[in-house]
Length: 345
Image (tube, rainbow, N blue to C red):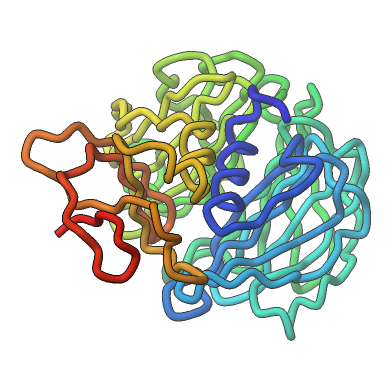
């Protein structure tokens, strides 16, 4: 597993918390998106690392489903973006031209091979479909080719065809990211929908593509250079843009609607989280406990301590979709009549 692929480690964390493990591990091309489906939403995931597997987690029931298979092995540049109330659109990456629909409303999407990308997609390849906001250009999916190129494309869902758009201001490498968002004119010079992009490749470059004017603009530089695993997302409720720095760091940033970057709480160590999600590991650690909104498949085994947070206890929280994981110091335990062990009150 590549420690530098921070977005891949986020996928690893989701899989591990839900009890899904891959012998090969999540690697290059690991990706995640969230369709507007299910009681509490779903998460569609690429394992990457050469696997063709596409899996989906129903957050409310903590149930994984095999959605299907990509038409080509998923590697560096593999990416996934959900069109609100529709399909996931995806690149397989790994220097292939494979582009396809999957996940989302599965009966509609059916893992369909779509028109190939105009050229092979490499590390830094990224996709951005329309968010769930009125007026968004729902027929279009925007794409970075990555792989040290300047290529930027638009896919028409209705026409199943690609159009070359103006080249990016500089070459895009590993850590390239893309998200479509609504601009109020402070970040990009339009009060309409725009596409935000990270250049990656250990640069601080952040750009906006003005959809109305069909041109690129320089945006506010990121607080530090972005490397492999860099990624972008928009919080639709408030319009904030969030970014992972990648490059083996824990840096997590937010841009407000005026274009100001701030540092959000650093990501927790995914290795610690993944290890702590194991019941056997939890049983050996009396000083830390985990609670999550994921529903357990079975009651916790005897000997596993649970707790609630005590005043002044140190904690870390990592919010992903609608799940929250918290690390806290354990409270003194009371006897459990069921197991003869001690659980919290």
